[in-house]
Length: 71
Image 1 (cartoon, rainbow, N blue to C red):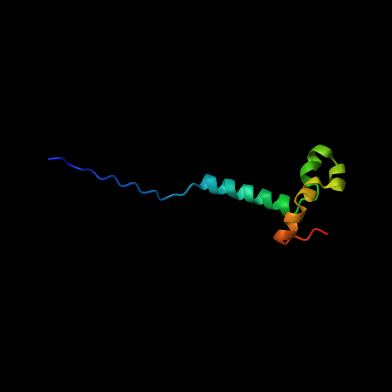
Image 2 (cartoon, rainbow, N blue to C red):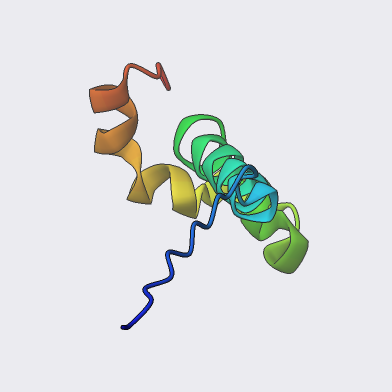
């Protein structure tokens, strides 16, 4: 006679690290698309990045589609 064993695994916790990482990625993405006016590249290009606004021009249409006013 053979015996069969049933293994029940219950996972009561969720991956907190993954949720925190996704929240950080979402927050940074929201800032870049919605609010950046040269801040990201100011670390590299200095004051010139506030005049050129590279990320702003790159995400300009996406800003309007998402409802962010930019001008």
